[in-house]
Image (tube, rainbow, N blue to C red):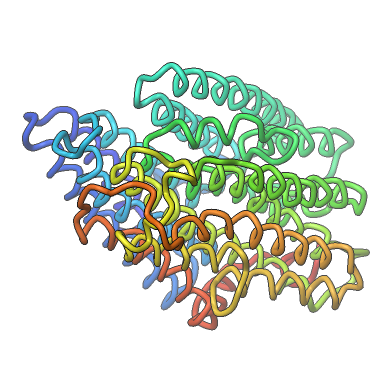
Length: 489
């Protein structure tokens, strides 16, 4: 319980310290907050592993009067992945945003925004109340929009405003669904909603909340804000925006459909959501294939990779009978979220290194840079293995579980989506890899410290280790797993 509280409060205290302390002490205070929150996240994982879900009643009052927090295997795993990415991004930003780096601008606002984002993400991962989740989403949106506009360039501000408009529309839709739910049932607690007496307005409420979350997740056709926002932000901010921010709304989608209102999971609704995910996989891959800048390729890849998670819904759906493949599909979707977070953070941090080294992220200017910066080139290649879903990566484990569920349930169409998405990922990631590992060197890079290069390499290696050691995280994710994730929607 102490670890759960620490994970929520430490980032907020560190954010305050990074603003209020004297100038020289702000970054060290932020880094201390990062280290302590990383320890708290690891501590929470250990508690959940040994004791099961960790619960906390705020003020000692149980729902529906009070608010419950709970860290299950899913929430704790996402919290640990977030902590690893945040720690890596903090180390990279300590160098990349320093005034001594060529072309860098000292960005003091980055540190409090990063820490506030971390606190909001942790709140979403453990919240069991739909309005609390809304508050967490709004805090994530405000910090993410500010991170996009951090450079102050016209392109970044335009991308931030576009993101803000989509996010606000999503917030209004989600809040409308929350209001309808509370008016009908007098509670917003997920556990209590699962035992509610259904009313005709429940389907509308679920639909509104889901539509709002799709806009925040940037699922097709709401994806148009994501690539400009992610590519315009500084590389450390891009890593946070791509690797972590969409995971909050994805988690809430899973909470709604598998825990709060699984009785409303009509096959037609599940099919529509999965179809949008399938289109995102293909369309995002095609758009990534024609980009000429590394950050845009990685950004459009995010559109494609997030689409895989929505295939979980029909693969875990059915006529109500027990489905032995449902747990594999659900767990595969979570593996996709975890491996994508680690690999995508590594890719954006690698892109930031190339920008600092050669002053450009155009593929033509990056030719031969793997020779000059081998650690960064290897990190990008490892992350590409994960996104392509090749063994032995965590991405392979995710797609293997989803593919197995597709064959076991007789839903072969989704298997073709998985194969097609993997082939597209191989095609659009081959282009930067071919440029990076070319024989000729297009530009002579400035020296980059090995410590800076080691950060994306470690994150990419962790995305591979997630597959190599998949049995342990697989078992961990089953702690507190909803019944519908095993029996089917």
